[in-house]
Image 1: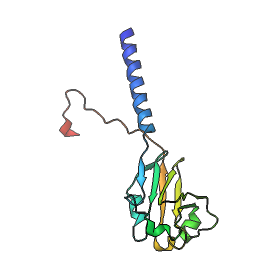
Image 2 (image 1 turned 120 degrees about the horizontal axis):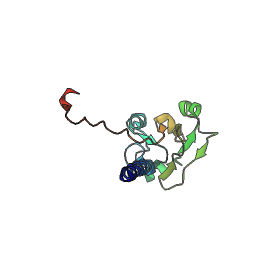
Image 3 (image 1 turned 90 degrees about the vertical axis):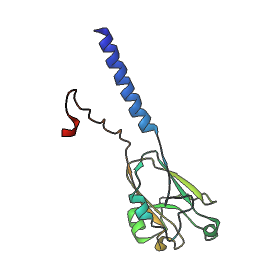
Length: 151
């Protein structure tokens, strides 16, 4: 009986460790799908809809020198400013210069980012829908003696 409890406890600890490991993994997302894709002409909406963003993931906004001379910015804004490309009264300017700006997604919500200087009107904006980290559900296992092809 004690051996059974030990195994049950060990199994529970293994499951909890696996869940915590999954939660601790953070991903880096290159906005637009590449290291220098925060630029006009790239469909950022389509890109963001095909990504899965979770709390503690990082966004990497990359753009080349040709855009730095235009005082390119990465601005976190509210939904209204996002929809209307308003680059004043922003929440946060995450621009650090050099065309390599990063942002940590700290909570489950929709984040809105635009580029200032008229580039938002040229499509340089993206909405990022962030979800909580959720461990994947365990896959069901067929019972002994059952025929898996009947499922």
